[in-house]
Image (tube, rainbow, N blue to C red; front, side, top):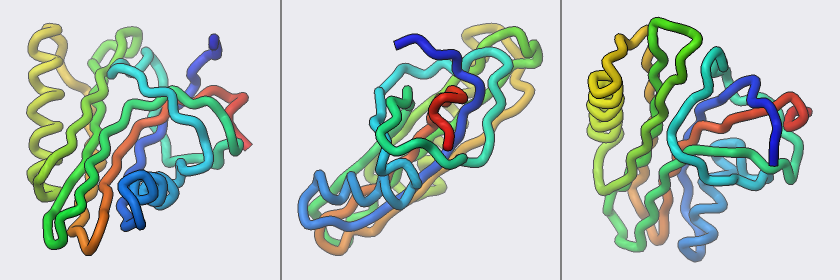
Length: 159
């Protein structure tokens, strides 16, 4: 699979379902990415790739995605998922994406991502030009899922 990533989009969703897989699928739908095929990737944002609002994506598209998801079958439990990205001052260098999922609030998930991005750039010796976090939390009624994702898109993926 070789295609040129031209843009990225961050999104999040949460939902209930009759099974853990249905809760995950419903969270994908709530996030706007339920009708594409996610290819899980590690956490590098290519250089000079803008992060935009989620566009319309062709159903069935194969989309490289960094994502985090947390499901639970414990009523009353709160689960959270977050993704974030940071880009360096030098636009010719890559950015970094971080993911988090766990038993946490939305605020806790956001703080965790911020800490991870700051460490990633400190280790790389790069200053951060821009950082953004997308997070969601879900309080379980029966079976729930929180999901956050950053899709890496090519022109051929878009409607």
